[in-house]
Image 1: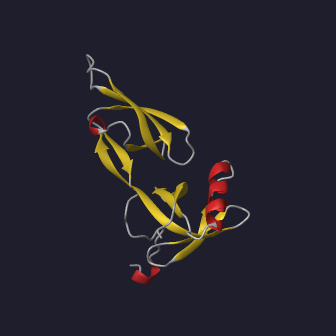
Image 2 (image 1 turned 90 degrees about the vertical axis):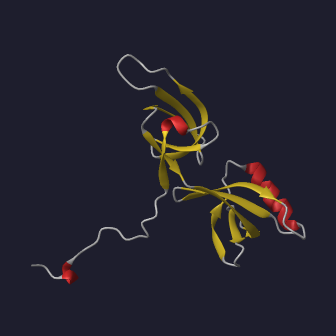
Image 3 (image 1 turned 135 degrees about the vertical axis):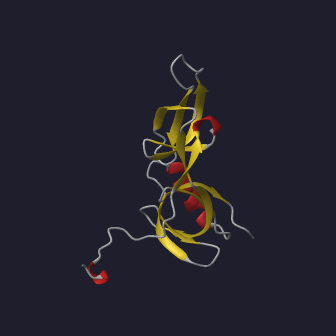
Amino acid sequence: MADAADETFEQAGSGASTSYPKQCSALRKNEYVVLKNRPCKIVDLSTSKTGKHGHAKVHIVGTDLFTSKKYEDVCPSTHNMNVPHVSRIEYQVIDMDSDGYLSLMDDKSGTRDDMKVSEKDVEMRKEFEARLKDDVPPIAIVLKAMDEEVVIGIKSGKE
């Protein structure tokens, strides 16, 4: 018999899932769903009537939360779809470098320097630069889902 010390584990983690199941018929427009393994916001939802040989079908159209790419899927109304755990986090912006990387501070005074404002979002970069020159540091709004994060907005910091 093999010793316990000989065991190997392919993966280690907390076991927390990035999504949870929800019945297709319970999904609504403007909610979130996983389509083609991507977290998406539902922009269109339609249900067909029950056919002669089966279930009612739900046609779901969603846009990717991070790339804005459109995805579609059809699912029987009684089957489950995965819904991503989506959170919105606010960070105080300390600084932004020339590449668009933000130095952020959370509410527990922890810092991180790995968030980047997209090159495509020129307006947001300009707004961060302008607000960093003010006395009140701006707040970056970050959307997180399925282990991905993106800066989605900016607002004025607290005085």
